[in-house]
Length: 491
Ligand code: TXE
Image (cartoon, rainbow, N blue to C red; front, side):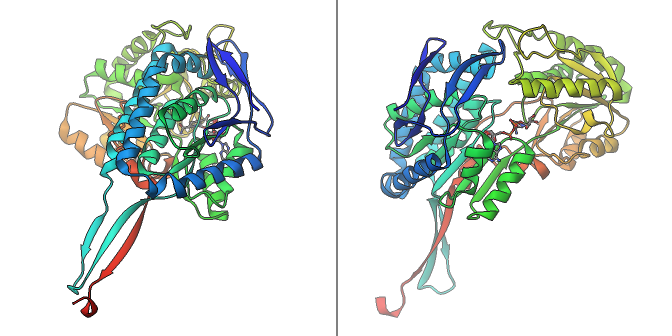
């Protein structure tokens, strides 16, 4: 019923994955492009509303029969470890596909896969350690138990910047908790998830526990967000789409929502920082993944007294990154994901040239593929578009500040609140500033280092809830209070 293609020597099925089977999708077919060459590499099938219903039914049936509270934590853990092993076994296939589908440089595609495997293993270990609590009552014949149960069927929707890693962050805790999943990858990057689906089957998961639907956001994504038999939706993507999803959830069955959204994160460099180290972290923090990270440190706040010293160090650090061939292990920066994103970034570059001082870069890189020069704008302030809006490209905005209070004010002068960093050797200052920052993650003397062990998520319009860490299990659990009574009848 569905079709198989070969991408980079790797066989893939382009259908929908429902009930551990490949089935035909009845939506409009979707082309996916290698952003390094601008060539179409595959056409995948997508889900119509009826296909969405079929996947949700499969997930529901699994939840009620073989999964959910029917499957022990120990077994869920065993399966997740087996899934991680499958990924490890086929890591080279995942990497090969991800390089061309997501435009990831090979070293970074590998890092994504390794981090994803580690994330699944972390949650595999947690699967049989989910605990509720016992509550003693004043009346000695009573006590209550707060049980933790899997929440039901979850829809999970991810973007294109880390297709497999964002999936692991969602799938790991959901499968550990006993939740069944209808998963939608981004339309730009469907391929590695299709490979992953095969691994789910090979790991031995019961049918219906994990289902994959490709499709565009406004059709398949929207149908998931509005579905009446989905209990939870977990989303990573833009703030406007997150808002739509929250509205759709509210207008349908009030499904529970977690959102991991955009950012315009401040990276604050004080005059008492190790400037060379700070420059390296700042460059890494903004240019990593082509600037396509929700937590990118795209606003670099530099204390005026060291600004002139910092700029050449930052440029040196930025220029040390190799841009270009995604298959070269030394490449740091590949292309932007799509023509849409590429054009959007070029628009911001023109805007920045009008508003601020272009220090380096500012153009397309080369003449094929969606590559952008690593760019630095100086003298940026928070009245400018490039100071306020998420560019999601390799574009750094340097902003001067005079005092600690001013740094905090500028840092928080944004509707986002995903991440921030403080570079200083004065630990009293670090502590003071950290406490004032409105951000879900604050790095001290470093940037961008994330771990599946540590909760991640945003303040303000950067999101709702947290992923990762043991806290990352919570969105997939419901608390059931059970009141026990052993009164006179039992004596
Ligand atoms: O994001 P969308 P886009 C930011 C970044 C980027 C901008 C636009 O600034 O330039 O968003 O990117 C699905 N109901 N981020 O348009 O729309 C869609 O199919 C349900 C930050 O790609 O958020 C895809 O799977 N789902 C971000 C996913 O949402 C819908 C990462 C992301 O798409 C939907 C990516 C709908 N109505 C972009 N509309 C981050 N936080 O890391 C779309 N989708």
